[in-house]
Image (tube, rainbow, N blue to C red; front, side):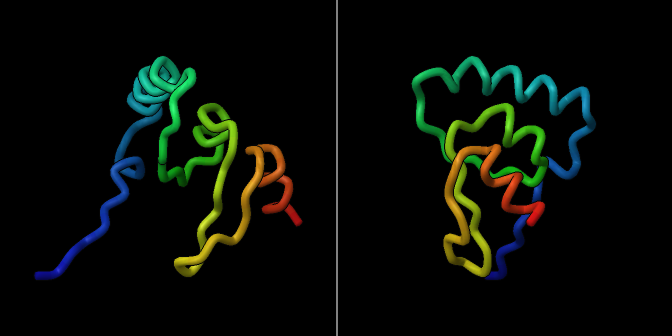
Length: 73
């Protein structure tokens, strides 16, 4: 059986993304969540700590600000 990865977030319009972010923000307080973010603005808004994966390996870990700063280097 073949598997196919689909980035559901890629198919969501900005207004719907805002609704999902607002819902997750309510759950986020004091809760550990694992999320896959391709939109850096969503990652920055919802995350206290971030792990970046590349080629199935951990490529970085830090705060959203540290991670975004590292991406610019």
